[in-house]
Image (tube, rainbow, N blue to C red; front, side, top):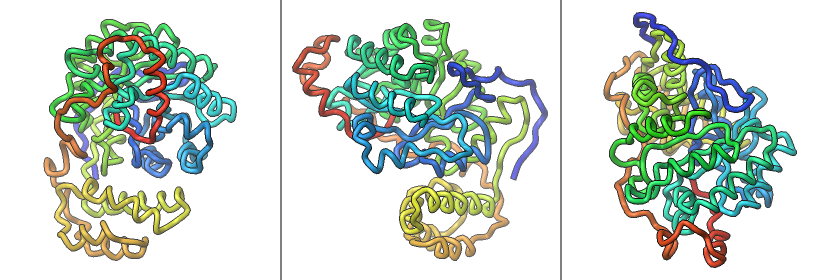
Length: 388
């Protein structure tokens, strides 16, 4: 399962987010349909860090929709409890934060300003919102005040495109509003997840905003990538998204790397099967439905078994299983002693997509102010989408 290399000295210290101290400076990025309670618990079983709930739409939380109330649940083993909010209307986002704090549902709140999904950005939300400086300032300031002693952080992108960068202005505003840390996905909204993340932007942000932690996000596929990002940018920690898809043990690698240990996970096919089965089991507990859990884990099949010789019949069978017994039957057909395939199981995963022009409201880029007409548009932007 593991390989031990020569020990090294610890890389950096713990990460501080307000009153919260995280032993290793690693954050699980919120991902819609992925970072629910089941997957967060699984990642914790392998490693350490701050594990963020998938993005919650503020309006849905204020209206207490059943789905939102389920998604903000945390297992008793989760500490600290971290939730990301998305919204465009300052009072609504602040009210959502008040609910989380007043009902003792979160120890940390993150705000999403990184979503590049067209249905969000064309209404002025997600990665489009920081372009409107006064709106961004109002939203962050009101949320920080509503959260009180619960720390608030901000996750953002570089900007809309290379001609409309927002991250430096937004980070300064967020700091002045009292946020505890800023995370930067080093791509523009136009880039979506394509190409390579511009880590130099993380370094620039770290040089510009020096009095709160700066976290880097983008293209961390291994522990070595995380250490390299810290070395090249001076960031205080890393945020891991697509790199952990089908690889919850990556958090074990990251914890070991930041502690200066040589431990690295190189799972056999049997160990991958065990991780997949454990994930399914936790999903059953989370959803309260075996059928729902088996449907949900289907999207994880390709990620878990990337590079391993499992055969098309087993692969398609797992992607259509409707019970744990069916999953067990297909996993039982695997060669559990098959070794780790090396590079075949590593590298990028998840959809990268292609660079494309960000969908924006009409005349959005003409001014950095928000007039009354734009505020009407923003009221329609609070949809349940994710990204960042």
